[in-house]
Image 1: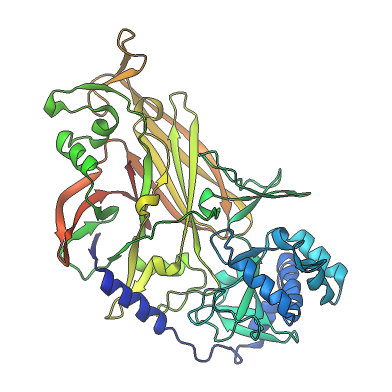
Image 2 (image 1 turned 135 degrees about the horizontal axis):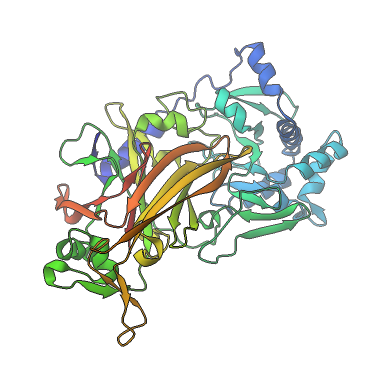
Length: 513
């Protein structure tokens, strides 16, 4: 399948702006929905019932201006890079002298015991302030605006386009996922970026860089960020740039799994010196065309996730929950998306190592519309914030990595079995008189013998997460491909084509830096 792309910052800004302006704000309240739908939105499992009780109570408590100001202040901290307020993290914070957030909320509950029970059992309970076109946490006028409160359920999002909300009188209203509300609204939900680390939960967080992901200790387990990508340490994040992936642009055709980005001298040098295996030049300095046929492993280089896109824009309905309206890629209740990329590699002993990396982005970072109304995919670049994986030591990790991608949604845990294979060659030798490091002889697997190690590993995700498939990355896969060129609209920008991998649903660029 051929994919075409077009890049222009000015045009992209117009497309995104037009997309937001075009969002329909009429007939948001669904008064004409069936009694059956209303009944389904009122019913639900125990977790949904508990969140619904919290939503009703919060809707009444929002008549308190001090509480509104408190929630705005907490949401603007974006502790998880989302306008989320984790209840367990703020419940004991004071709103006024000697009065905590939980004290105020309890004072509005019909049954304090019922509310306390609901809160205790919903450890990931979160209040989210949606990013609407005309209203968000920054625009919230807490002196005058009293939001209604919606309750979110991942299973209902898979089955319906409607969401239930309550006002201060506990009056229910029904809203469309795909049409932005024209009134201030908060959402009660489970947090998608925090996990409970205990014996019952296999969705453990992990930081290969040794970063502390701990948030809070509770009697039921530790609350931790599920990835370092979600921990807001207030460091400046480089602005992501985008190109539009669309079929109407014939100037620079790309295949799935291919990328276009800024020209890099180090990669270009590897392409020129060792075109048959660019990583051999980068990691070992090997270049047969320059009569350099062996080298030791170079430290200080890491494979990095540099860019990502969805192969087919029509997949938006699969990735964005309850996104049924093809004319509107936004889903106001969804918030930002959480993606995880699992990288598996096998050691010489046959044991599998899994490095899991996460990142977050808006729906509008991945999808948008052209002037002709065509839905397109955007490529999401990490620029100077490329996500480090590990150095690719072929003697240690073999010649193949398995890549698995999914978009996370809270739900019941399930396991997935992944088969991983990698080939280890005998073209490594140690010359103790020169170095304690092993010399790699020749490119790729050399001319010696080889052995393939195959094993399986299990990963834990949820039954509501969107599995985006698997792909294979080989050590000898090209990094820079095709010819470089200047951007027609700006000759000062020099671009190159890069190779990535595609699962058939999503493409990711992984390159050494």
